[in-house]
Amino acid sequence: MTTVDPNEADRVRDAVRQYDERQPALVRATQGFVALITSALDDAGINYLTVTGRTKTVESFAGKAARRVDGKLLYPDPLEQITDQIGLRVITYVRDDVAAVARLLAGELTVLEDRDMGQETAEQGRWGYSSRHLVVAVDASRTLRPEQEALRTYTASVQIRTVLQHAWAEFEHDIRYKGTIPEAFAPDLNRRFTLAAGLLELADQEFSTIRDRLQEALPEQPAEAADEDDPRLSAQELAKFLAGTYPDAGWSRTEHYTWISGLLLELGITSLEELAHVLGGLDSEATNARMGYRYPPAAVRRLDDALLAVYGQEYVGLHGNSHRVQQLEERLAKLR
Image 1 (cartoon, rainbow, N blue to C red):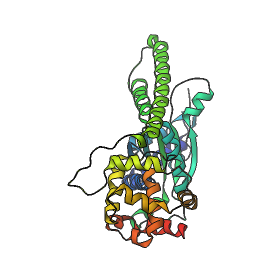
Image 2: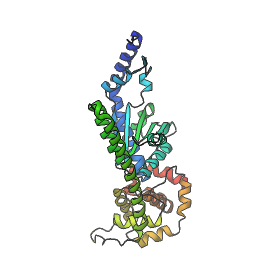
Image 3: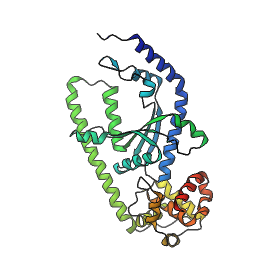
Image 4: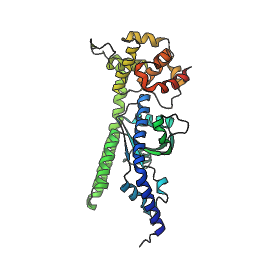
């Protein structure tokens, strides 16, 4: 029988009490981190499905704080050592974008921990749980809006995975940890979970191949007829043009093509011929190099940089850019 040190029990209770007091502020910080990471992904033009966040409940924190291994507390200082009090999850469509998101966060935030769970599983010669796990904090040198300053005092746990990896992880967790598996069924279920993980890994690879093949073929496909009542370039024709202009850039989110088409309209650019003329005298590779990205910028971000390089302050001052003037000023400084 394990004897529990009364002092340890008191420390756990005190930590839970303090966490209960802090939790409302943690909820606000969680929302702040979701907004910060969503903005970074959108600004970078990386394609993703969702960014979500959750704050650890008091009950969940209490359970984790009381965990023991060989009779000893797993977290002697739970308020400092439990790093998933703020939990974020970024879901992407394909595996390549998992790495792109991780590189982006490494450039935008301080990464305190980085574990590639899929790689660890593969190195053990098996299939199973696959996800990138980061623990991040806001770098002291990063400029934040006044309402975001409180984020500097927190860390956040970030899981990055594809939609297929997410489906497997959620289903497996639901079955294993929220249900009761009869012991006689466990070997068969383990085998089936492993089989499903292998099949989903193959599906992830195929999705990446499909995207690459489509991206290669996209510029050669005829565009659909434009809407005569809308003077903007359509998202489809712009996507095809950018796939040909920046063949090494990834796809952007669908709505981002529509958004930057509106900026082009503000600049008086309503045809691909006009856009090609504007970009014709620009060394796009040199522009990309001067930005110093630690992640591969997607197509819309490449065009965004090009327009910033060509038009300078005129581009910064567009109505459609009013929400990101400071970010554009910082990027423009790199191009001067």
